[in-house]
Image 1: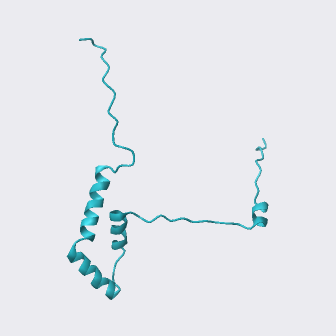
Image 2: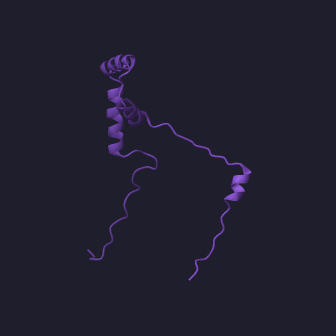
Image 3: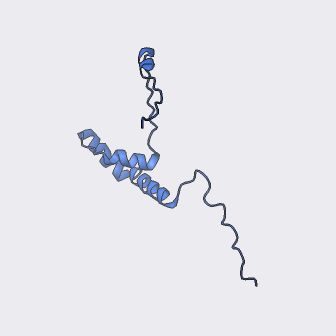
Length: 92
């Protein structure tokens, strides 16, 4: 057997867009908690009392994903014209 044998290239790896094992495990745990009948009843009671903590929001983000937030900013033409920048070389 030759000594300079090159190992074969690695496989294709994880498919693009698929979740890694840790992310999938966290999602499964969060969904399991959120879908538990005892938890739903407890949440319903706390919501009626006005005492639902922020943990529910975090669990929902982990379990079902955070909704996308889009912010659109517009400026009047006068302001845009005022803030036109030109590059000036640094003086030595």
